[in-house]
Structure formats: C-alpha cells, structure tokens
Amino acid sequence: HELYDAFETVIEAWLPYLRSMTVSLSENGIRMAMDLKGDPKLPELPLPAECKTSEGITYLTIDRRTGGDVS
Image (cartoon, rainbow, N blue to C red; front, side, top):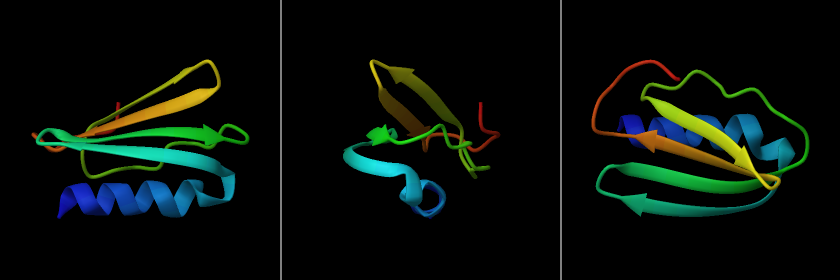
C-alpha cells in the first residue's frame, strides 16, 4: 500500500505542473519520467525516493523494498 500512497501523493502534488509522464513498474518500485513546468517541491513520501533532472526531464524513482525518509 505504501507504493500506491507514494505514487498518489506525487500525482496529487505535481499534477498542476505535469505536461507529460511515463511510468515504469518493477519488483523494486516505480520510476516516473516527467516533463514538468516549473520546479515543484517533492512532497514527503512514505518510501525512499530519488529525484533527478536531466535534459529537462525529471526522473523520480520510488523504492518499495524498504521504508524510510525521502532523500
């Protein structure tokens, strides 16, 4: 349930900034590649997450293997 909660939290917080998004699922979690307008703050999530931007695309990886703080 924590992975779904984390995904939902990101979508709710970043929807106003979202231009396009692709989502990849794996046994370890979820990865989103997003074209965002602006630079929204990453909300607090129930699982560890890594957020990077490259060439205008924001990559957010949420790891479901362990709980913890957002990094």
